[in-house]
Length: 203
Length: 417
Image (cartoon, rainbow over all chains, first blue to last red):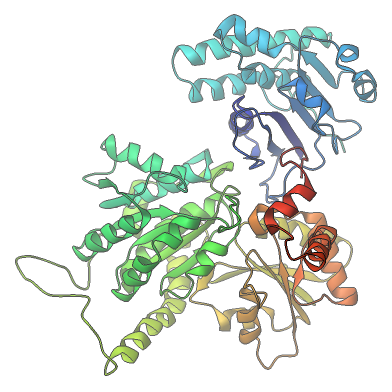
């Protein structure tokens, strides 16, 4: 089982991100269970959402306490929410920021993870370019696909298209495709198995 | 067909497959995505000639459905929390009149203090109103139970609440398999009322019933629930045969063979309990679980049969009878009357407090090794409780308890758990 926790602020689409991820996993033929942390519903307040991914039906309903993957939509949360809490030592980390790990003051944290298990990239900027709106979801989900290879990019694109029909969907798909390329480039991946076989979850 | 769906959307689709004829809903908080989705389907003409009424309150919603149901219409609504309390008077009336309305309860805590999160306080408050209460474990069962609920309600002429954990199930995206319209039509025939208000053939219902007949009428309401104890497993069986899933029924046992300890619970927490059972079984502890699907009628005999070999039954419940303790555990104790079984009450998950596998495992081990105090409050922060008790001891003007406790625990949403 791969356990994913997404951190953001109310209004940034944390819950939608977890939902879309679960749909993409479902489209890949695996099991997923996504749910919000049911935090306060104020815009801007710290919120979290969860998605579990597995090869068999998922029964547990507890929040994700020991994530294998942490996605941070808003890097200002790094300083007052324990976003890394319980993260598996060999887990994955994705942060939306145009700054670097040292600039964010999380160099050590990132260095503690295995090579190729973390990526900080400007998801909001990619979204602004195609959507003219600061909504980093599609970019982060594509980044997740590129980094963990636990869901295919094609299913992420299909989930986006189903949720946002029309031009909005098309623009979001452009965001996702660009983000996928950006993350793969940063990881130095040039192989052709872009949307290929998923990696096993860390033990 | 299988979909990855939000629980509320799956329920809405299942309800639509049941061809409801009248839905009445109060469209502001506390409400669910269920009626939002259904209202869209009605507007798009996807549910035949179904009428959707936006009303001015939950009380009005159920009152409208009482009228609609008495006119012979298949009637549905959904509510939660304060909404259910606000319709309480009509809840009793619907049952007293024997009207087969189906209502989803997206289980949530009650105020005060204001809390919008999940527990079972709302439906527990109305447990004695005469409605059948069925509890769903996951999105799939939530969808399936609605189809069975209309059939059960209409065969018995008794309203049914389908209780679905608020947020935990209503807002979770998970795979749900929905039957086809043909399959549902075969399982659920058109509603054939036992009486109908018809201007062309007038009758009166809701008569004044004095002491000369009231006890008999009430007994007959109770008798209806006794019949439901036989009917619920039969309808589950028919559903399994025609649609291929074993959702519903009175209860489900999980790894209870040779179990010395059995955990009993309602609703979605059973998923996490099963994981805890697997963990303990792997360590060699003979632990099992029983999920109560039917809560009203209470399946005393079936439960007794399911747990009678165990030395200990631990009832994990998301409610609190203030001044008493457990509600479900009291009923479990009555069902096990005369047996040497120890019954523990574990109050858990109040107001949305997460129930974790680790906490369940710790609690079950503690129960087996040294026993539990009665009732046991799972993961209660005793430091916070004792500090507030000390404040109250110290000064008369100790302030408002919820605010005092809030100040102590700090801002919400900063911690992950």
